[in-house]
Image (cartoon, rainbow, N blue to C red; front, side, top):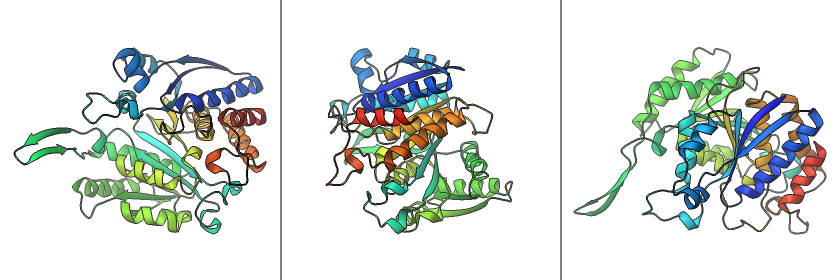
Length: 362
C-alpha cells in the first residue's frame, strides 16, 4: 500500500529523534511491502530563521493533502524572548488548530523492563496502562483575549479559558469510545470547585456519559488527579482533560514510564474507529530539549512509538504498529538503554544506535 507522510523534524532534538522514527518506518516498508512517500517541511524556530514565520501557509496547505504528519519538536532558547512577536510554538499550535486536531491521545504504559529505571517503587508502576486524552484546540492556549498591557499599576497580562459544549462533548466522546476497547472506565478531570469552564465541562461530561451505560465515569479535580497518578496510577484507565490540565498531567505521568523519552502522542481530527482512518499529527511529548540537542544522547523511542500510533490511527496498519511496539519491548528486554533510562553502571546507546536496534527487530 502507498501512503503520503509529511515529516517535520523541527527544532532541538526533533531532527535527531525523527530521523530514527523514519529509519524504523523504512524497515516496515521492507518487511510489509508498503510505500511511504515522505515529504519534508519546517515548523518552529527553524522556520522563523528560514522564512520569518513559525509556519507558512504552504506548509499548512500541504499538510491537508497527506495521510499523516510525523513531527519532532519546536522551540529553544534562541527564540525564547518574552517580547518576541512570534514564537516557535506558535507554528505547531497553528498546525493543530488549522487541521482541527482536537483530540491529543497520550498513552502512558509502563514496561516491565524499566521498573527499576524510575524513582518510584516497582510495585507502584508495574502494569500501569493509562490513556490520557487532552483537548488540543481550545482553552487557555487559544481563547481570546490573550494579551499583555500597561496599567497605572504596571504591566498586566490576561489569558482566557473558554470552552463551549461542542468542544467538550467531542473530546469526552473520544474517551468514552476508546474506553470500550479497554477497561471501560473514564476519569474526567476538571476544577469544577473554582472554574466556571470546569463546571460546564463536568456538566457536559456527565450528560454524554449517560449515552454509554457500560462505561463507568468518575470526576476528579486536577490537583487530586495529579496526586493519585503517582500514588495509585493503576486506578486509571482513560483520562479526559482540557488543554492545560492534560498537558501538565501527562508530563507528570512521564515519571511512571521512567522518562519523557518513552511517551508518544497522537493528535486526531476525529474519533478513532477501527477501519476508519483520520488525519493525524504524531509527535513525542518531550519537546525540543535544547540542553542535549546535538549530543546524540536523546531517546528516540517516543518518536518511534509515535510512528507506531501513526500506522494504527491514520494508516490503518495495526499489525505493523504492533510490530514496532514489540520491537521496542524486545530491545528493552535485551537491556539496551539510552542515557535517560540507564543506570549508572550501564553503558547507554546513542540515539542512532537505539534506532538501529529497533529497526533491526521490526
